[in-house]
Every structure is written in C-alpha cells, then in structure tokens.
Amino acid sequence: MSADAPRFARRVLALYGLFVLYVLAMPIVGFEAATFAFAVAGMRGVFGMPLWRTALYAALLTLVAEGLFGIGLGVPLPAGRLW
Amino acid sequence: MSILEALAQGAEVALAPINLLYCLLGVTLGNIVGILPGIGPATGIALLIPVTMSMSPEPAIIMLAGIYYGSKYGGAITSILLRTPGESSSVMTAVDGYELARLGRAGQALGMAAFASFIAGTASVVLLMLFAPLLAEVALAFGPAEFFGLMMLGLAATAALSGGSLSKGILSALIGLALSTVGLDIITGQPRYRLGWFELLEGIDFLVVALGLFGITEVLDTVQHGFAEPVRASYGRLRNLLPSREDWRRSALPLGRSTLLGFAVGVLPGVGAIIASFLAYATERAVAREPGRFGKGAIEAVAAAESADNAAVNGSLVPLLTLGIPGSASTAILAGAFLMFGLTPGPLLFETNPGFVWGLIASLYIGNVLLLLLNIPLIGVFVQITRLPFALVAVLVFVLSAIGAFALSNNLFHVWLLVIFGAVGYAMRWAGLPAAPLILALVLGNALEQNFRRTLAITDGDYSAFVSRPLPAALLLLALLFAVLPPLLQWNRARVAARVVAHGRAEA
Image (cartoon, rainbow over all chains, first blue to last red; front, side, top):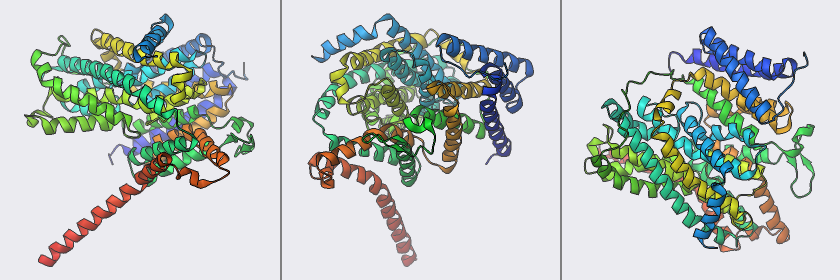
C-alpha cells in the first residue's frame, strides 16, 4: 500500500459524498446549478484544481451538458423547485 | 443472397450520409475514450447510449460499435508516449512502444500501431464476414434447450476467465441473474421482487447497472489508486509517422500471426482483447529470432500487440451477432443497446434485419479506414487530449452517468439506483468480484429464463430435455467443465507440489 493510500481513500469518499449531494440537490436547485456546483466542488475541493480553471471547466461542462442533452437531444433534465 | 450481395446491401446502409457521420463520430469518440485514463470502452459505450436514445437503430449501433473498436486505436497513443495505457488491452503495446519513444522513434511506433490496427481490423472483419453467416445458419436450427446451453456456456466461460477466482466470477454472475429476475415475470406477467417500487415493474435497466459498475466505479478506482496528472511528454516532435522498410520486414509476419490469434481468442467468450494481446506478445517473443529485442524497443512487438487487440474486438462480435451471446463487458453493453432498440442479437437477426447486420459489418470496414485517416494526420490533436486533467474527466463521467440514468424514465429513481450501483461496483472491485459476469448475466438473464421455461413447457416439465439431445448436453457439459476444471487442476497442482516436497524431505 502506498503512503498516499489514506489520502486517496478520503478523496474517494469525498467524491462519492459529493455525488450523493449532487443527486439530492438536482430536484431542488435544478440540473444546471447542481451540475455547476458539483463540478466546482469536485474539481476544486477533491482534486485541488486552481479556482479560475475550475470555474472555467465547470461552466463549460454545464453548458455542454445542457446544450448537448437538454437542447440538442431533447433529453428532459431535472428541473428545480426553487425557481 | 451471397456474402458479396449482402455486403453490397450493407455498404448502401453504412454509406448513407447520416450513418457515415455517426460512424465518424463513434470512432473519434472511441479514440478519445481509449486515450483518457479511467474510461474503458465499456464505460464509453454506456456513457454514450443516452445520446442514441432518440436515434434509429442503424446509426446508433454503428456509433456505439465505433466507440468499441475506436478505443483500441486510442489506447496505443498513451501507451507509446506516456507508458500509461489509456485502455487496459494496450498494456503490451506500452512495453516496447515506450522504449521506441525513448529511442526517438515515437512517430514510427505510433505509425506502426495505427497501420497494424488498421490491417488487423480490416482482415478480422473479412473473417467475421466469412464465419458469422455460416454460424448463424447453423444456429437457426437451435431450439430453446440449445440456446439455454449456449447461454450457460457463455456465462460459465465469462465467470471462469474474467480474472480473479472462479468462485468470485460465479458469484458475480449469480448476482446478475438475480437482478434480472426483478420486474414482470416474462411468461405469466406477475410482478417479482419490486419491493413496492412502481419503477421496478419494468425490471432493473442494464444501463444503470453498467453506468454504476463501469462509469462511477472506474473513476472511484482510479482515484483510489492514484491517477497520473497530465505529463508533458518528452517524445520530441512527431515528424515521421511512416515505419521504415526494415520495420515492415520485421513486423509483417508477427502482424499476420497475431491477427489470426487475436480473432480466434476474441471469438471465445470471456477471454477478450487483453489476453489476446498478451498471448500475441508472448508467442512472438517465443518464436522470434532475436527475443532479446523484446522489451527494448522491438517494433514487431508493437505490431503484434496492436493487431491482436484489434482483431479480438471483431472476433468478439461473432458470438454476439450469430448466437446472441456477448463474450465481454463491452459486447454485453452493446447487446443491451441492441435490445433497447428492439433488436434481439442472434441468428434471426441475419434473417429479419439483414440490412442492419450487414450495414454494421460494412461500417466496420469504413470505421477502420476513418480511424487510419484520423490517426495519421491528426495524431498531434489526439496527443493534446492526454493533457486533459483527470479531475475534469472524473466530474464529466459522473455528470454524464447521472444524465444517462435520468433519461431512462425522466425521474430521479434511476439516478438513485445509479448511486447504489456505483457503491456496489466499488465494493465488488474491493472484494475482487469481476463486473463483467454480472452485466453479462443481467443482459442474458431474461433470455436464459425464457429458454429454460420454454424447454420445460415443450417437454411437459421434463428436465432430461436438457441432456437427452447431444448438442445441449455437450454445451452444458462444457459449461460444467469451465466451473469444475480450474479447481480440479489447482488441486492436482497442489497435490503434485506436496508430493515433490515430501520426496525431497525423504531424500534429505
């Protein structure tokens, strides 16, 4: 077992926990807001990516997911109750 | 209809602009899937099935198959440049490919990998085209007992050969079979094991399980074992991608031999491309005039590993298309996609949907040409993909998996199932249970049960119907051998070893 094993195990737990929160948040805040928040929390919080890159990638990822599936392919994505 | 007439009919389908476009999209995505760490072909296909839900079957399956064989081309790029196989079956390419890159011959190694993949891919489609219709014709005479025997053989072989211990493989297959019984009874229409959930009436969708077991689990596993951050590869400029005449002279025979070996191995259920490339590498080292070159940058080793890998992919399509028995996780997910579009893989497909089957076969030729055209001039673009941060890939896989699960029924029930199967997959990985037998059993479960119960219905509940005719009896015996032989051989080895030790002691 490598010396980094406990750190990696914590990352696994954190990433999985964030995914559960993401699924919980989707029907409340909607797909777009939940995806953006999950991407930021995942890339910054779990993997330690620099903030500006995280924000850029999260915005791009949300736009591509919404554009490709929601608009392009007409897959209905979860809507939020808040707005 | 002769094979050439059928192929001409298939070419008409495959060359339709929309199918051509999706073939290009599939092989490009496959190439990217092969390059990205933490995403194998099974994950790639499962992640992109939701994209195809609103499409007609031909472009959808052509695209998904493109992802499958395209990933084999992509896997070679990271193997050669970074010694990090983006795809597990490219491990053997990394051994000599990376050494060649260190010697300043990365371009030729990449070129040889692309040409070997193309030649093996094309030659193995010819073999597929010759063997598949013959096998399908034989299988047309099969009754439910024969199909039951075949499916049991496919399951037993996958459980025995998918890595790890036999008992774990069998346990994984049994979990898959148990999951396949959830939902309406296929004969009586009675609901089974739905635990009060209305959403479970239609059963557990294979896609949710595949996304959980491959998508989520694969990412968590990569995080668990540490991931390589993008490396600025030090292979210099990729100027010359064309292998020299000497390279071709050394590689021609290994390429031919490995293509045949890879195809034959690919046809066997449960064996797959990883073992094909290992076997091809070992065979070539054994027959080489200068075996010392292997491991130190032998270009013929790259040709052998890549050709076996690609030939095995087309070989694995033979049992899927002709018998309806997928032999690996990727082909099991492809089989699930067939079923999703109302197409039952198996011998009848050649009779009822010849345009579709031959269109798919023709698209394999076209896809291989497209991959060669993509990989030679655009290699620089694909190399850039190796620099994508793993954090982005990980989050992308989670988001795409959630969208795929949600798209199944437009509610969050399936997304929660995905969360559960992500954890189940991770626990299985931790316990050493292979995922391939589970997904295979889940996809085959309904057909297996249907054929079992049909046989009993035809024979008034006579169980001897499974062993009274030679073919089903032989198939079931083979399935039993897969389950019994490995522990017997292990026991025998332990007995011989104990006897040798005892003999040694007595002499001392």
